[in-house]
Image (cartoon, rainbow, N blue to C red):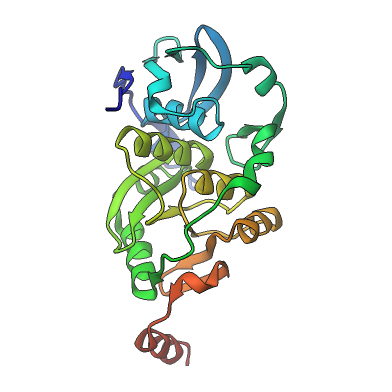
Length: 282
């Protein structure tokens, strides 16, 4: 039986209205994302400050600890309590984190917007990650996923300036949708939600609006997810890591267009859709 941590379920306003002037001197009010710092304390030790929208602060914190490999099971965490009055989250573990000083001494600043960071030892774990090779996704399901994200109600449509990440089943069902200032925060929040709900990744598809960097590929792999889609492109290191672990990487996903870079054996093309694409191009 899993012992879920006690969560605070903290909430806050995700957007703020501000007055602007346009090029003609006209005044209007627009909404912008309400970015806030959230300092993570683990067993009273300050660990990191995350710049976040704050939509899922408890899941973000748990997913961050999971993806940094600082906690290895849900049972390790007793409580996660967020206090927006002081912009902090207090995590209490059941038995402490072994060698936390040494494990967090080396940091790598990532390319994520909001300037994310990972602890350097994570890069050493890539070789041990094994993704399922026998799962496949249909071309039509890719299109369904891309379209579902396109029409989904979001902070981005209201205020812009945020990234979204989403988790889907192989038949295109939307399971989680999280927005945050940086894509690294959004992926961590989904990792946390998966852990809390005991959801595994081997038959799931992960979508992000952000670039497919090495950080995003590694985090997706740590969650056991074989498919990673992006509306944007990829980096050389993201491609290299995905190729190394045989993750199926899809970039430039928009409408009926995508570019599959790695793990190509997992995609099932559908002749009628290929023919339609050819007709549309002509």
